[in-house]
Length: 115
Image 1 (cartoon, rainbow, N blue to C red):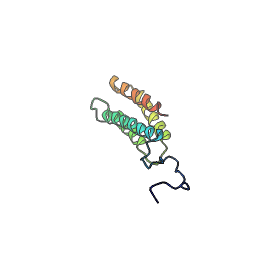
Image 2 (image 1 turned 90 degrees about the horizontal axis):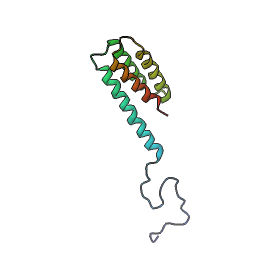
Image 3 (image 1 turned 135 degrees about the vertical axis):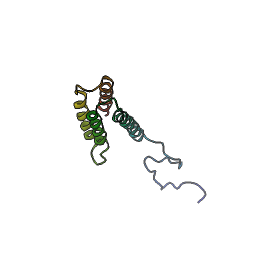
Image 4 (image 1 turned 60 degrees about the horizontal axis):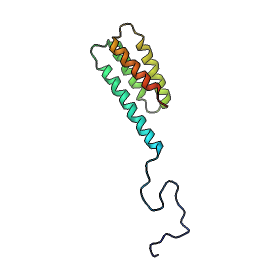
């Protein structure tokens, strides 16, 4: 052959005809964004777990919510719902300091905004 592409070769969907690397599609970009947001939420839960001014039962509950989010074989929406359930229960604890309650509300809000 003289460097030309034969006419009988069919294009593969998603792969440019010139052989260039395909661009990352919106689905991959969205998945990376969700992973980054989820990591931020887990980091916020870590801060709550490690805060000595928060009662021990709240720290245990925050760890439980973190564990719910980390379950690999459970669908993401189920993990989020389970974590929100645990955190909502913690937010109603009368012994929870104000900054802890605000943090929990912020985490719940972030979890509920997942699509």
